[in-house]
Image (cartoon, rainbow, N blue to C red):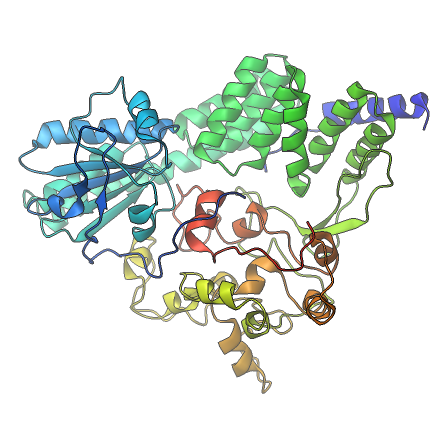
Length: 560
């Protein structure tokens, strides 16, 4: 491979990146998977947790009874968690410690010393607890941090508030006034309803400003675009897309410190943001840490929405090292992603990184990640036309441990949530009728069943074939194939592996249609715009994976 070809490819790709606007797009095993987190109307479990203050005694949650109480789940590295702690402190000061109980619970598994360091500059008058085994965190079904639970004097959960919207303090104080008996329910709702509308208004305004920024940036009006992005994050701070847009603009200006700040802030609000991780890697590559950048970029190769930029950044790293063959491969792959548009499968053909000096590996079939701003739930991740769904019973034969763990999760019972009277609080909060039967509503079935309307999957309304009832029973709920893809092809490989006891690689299964599970697969349903998801919901992939899926066991014949 000659230098002229490498440089030519680099120049072409650099030009493409200049004229293309960058658009936004596993970890530790949990210790416990609650079968049914306690719900609104149920008493909080009597759990005892250690205090962050080593001089303090272990704190039994039973001590919260006798008067209304607030429990705030927070993370030390998250600004809006600290804002929530400060707001609750002000509410406690206003209502008085004789009126309400308050505790904060760290969800990060940080040490007591680390938590105390973060809180050194704060003036909190209530206990801060540690939850090293995530016992209460799991029992409460926490997905987003901060999350605030409000209990009545009997220790029964009455209200649950996720995140920290602008009206957080007002809503929490109003609900506590109700629990104290100072106002009636009608008054409480009349005081809160305008704030809910304001939250929706803020989110809508933020998206409008973000989209305006994209249009201005595409037209070359960079100063105006930056102003629009800044207004977007001012309206709604938890909008990582706008923060990433600002980060990439600062990166282009070689203001690496400002760029890094924007990307880190985006990750604070949405730790699963692949775009923010890409931005971090780009900053690291330009500030003397190419190895760290390379590690991040290689982990992002499955994300179609950032495919070109990811490959370009890897090409730059290998080019700087003098690995010209490898650099050219990634530059060319980056250029190809500009023209590859999958036809009707909703998947991306993504080459994995080859070892230095080796030929590129065969393409891998991976689901395309979903943009929260434009996605239609579940439609964005579609199986190929030549595969079909086989059902959880097929998977259960070999993966019994995983099946047993999954069976007790909310995902397994997702279909039941559509029945009249189930999850009424969620339905009411989203303006849905809790008495209505949603089990035949296509808008709901797409996410609350597996393979809805696809061969072998949950049958669409009107399916009259004899297998329809069996398929309905088999695929009611979010089953194995909702996340791992329809199994008609790759389960044959599973059976061959079992018969021959040979080793295999994940790549082999991906080539047979198995999905590589990641944020893009989950976001097909966990996306703002779905009927039951609030507009201020921020999907945290890692937290949701730990709290809501099955346990992950080592696979016997896997070679890598």
